[in-house]
Length: 252
Image (cartoon, rainbow, N blue to C red):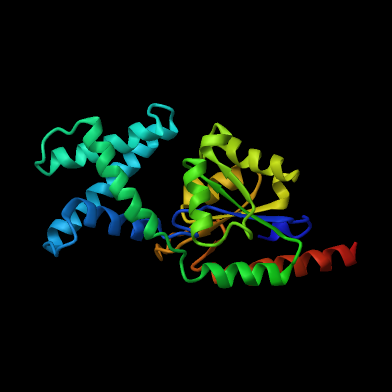
């Protein structure tokens, strides 16, 4: 972070799923109740469904982000594959859409922020009231904005750049530069925080932003990329940065 000392950082942007909102917990709750039913199921079966659902989600979303599928098509692909693999046979588009509508209701009801989100954002705004906060996210813009509204973060995170509107997805530099352009800031004036090392932090750095890796999984990876274990570590890091900046400016 030492190269940030003389730069006027004006904004902090965040990844959404896995950084601010616990997508995995919401998806796990939704798929187990929708696919296995509300009754207790053997833990092994639940684990198999959840694990395979996450794999199918990553695979289908990659194809959507690459432009190979529409958002609706990637949803259908996920559940039709899951149903077939667990012995429920081929499903029509109508069956897939009906199931996914039920899944979405449960998924949206389960949207929650991580416990460290509100304290971290409050600390950032307390440290610098004029700091602009926002989100850069891969996915459908309407759904991602609904998430922010559902968890009560819309007023605080007013700037949202979503891949469906930007025409590019992380780790493509274009989506990061689009966010900076919309803020009318240079990339060197923006800090970006995300839970994926390559897709978020390293990609942001490659685009000229100041990337920070949120290592929620305690991966203990050796990396030169600035990283934190919890969002509550972000405000002290940012305060330290601003203190160094003021010292440099006085010395000049």
